[in-house]
Amino acid sequence: MRYIRPLSIEDAVGQLAGSSGTAAILAGGSDLLVRMKGGFVEPDLIVDIKAIESLSEIRETAEGFSIGAAVPCAVVGENASLKKAWPGVVEAAKLIGSKQVQGRCTIVGNLCNASPAADSVPALVAAGARAVVVGPGGRRTIAVEAVPTGPGKTSLAKSEIIEAILLDKRAPRSGDAYLRFIPRTEMDIAVVSAGVNLTIDEAGVVKSARVAVGAAAPTVLLVEEAAEALIGRKLDEAALERLAKVCAGACRPIDDKRGTVEFRRKVAGVLARRAAMTAYTRAGGK
Amino acid sequence: MAGVAVSTTINGDNVEYLCQPDETLLDVLRDRLGLTGAKEGCGTGDCGACSIILDDRLVCSCLVLGAEAEGRRVETVEGMAHGDTLHPLQQKFLEHAALQCGICTPGFLIAAKDLLAKNPDPSEEEIRFGLAGNLCRCTGYDKIVRAVQDAANVMKGA
Image: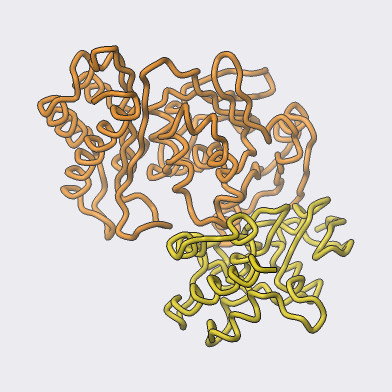
């Protein structure tokens, strides 16, 4: 096993491309080191990306925000400007693990670990976040929902690294929210979760919306029909009922000790409904 | 396996060591440097017994590679007391009997130190949330919370 700490993303990609055997990218390590200890992975090469300066910053630009791949969630949670624009994304990132884990874990790691129950992912999908992927051929930008393809699997090639997550500049009267169900008060893995992001007009009518459900299928689901249930309406009871029903119907959950299929379906609807109400209030709707 | 040469700062001292690329910082501290304050409870970041402060961030040292400490600042429980004078948190843990078996204690002390550095006057709820990443199977947490509250009062007056 080799451990390297490249200083540029191009060098990191080159090292990955040139390596034989298995390679792992190390950012916060809160998933990787656990899997190494459990014997589930034994990488021949560990590429620590934390010395690449541009990956350690949150940048606010004219287009929105760029969150570097090595930024710990604790830093995401302390960024007042990001929190104001995207409170749902920030609250989701803050739910990952304990304070100790927050000091290390990253949203890109959460995305690339590809757990269907990843907390930050439904919020990012609802937010329409994009991932900047760097590979030997250069950069490409893809929708966050295109990254995980199944539990523990991503669409990334071996020599590709996600450099940053991009979030758009906020339109006026917009809000987002993320909620999960766990049997404890914190430090647990989502049994089911939902993220909602919406924009309303002056009259409080939803102009655009995105709804995502987590821990209810092999990957986080973007539920377009659920967004359609909200668009063009105020958040009245009928719209909320329809939203909950569509989300419950879109789930393809597993039955396990943490929740039955029936329970997960019902709670997905309840959480989507509550998240929509919070997002609506944050957007200034009444 | 070739060793990784690491130069770092631990409790204010410059320290150099060689470690394996897959060796955790917890194992380096305990097995190579003789700093056995941080404990291995779960080894998977759940229990907080291995908590340390890395560049002003509370982390589980079982989830950090020894190699990653290069050029960074590490604070462990061994750096809390000054000679024979205990840190107020240590003193208050003793006075409030905030420990029984003691395995979790170094992690709690470091986590509480980090908490008070960022929030010198925490509410009981803030203490409970702030220390939620540390598990104790003996005390039921009440005495720990009271010790931290008391230490916070002492430290504010200092």
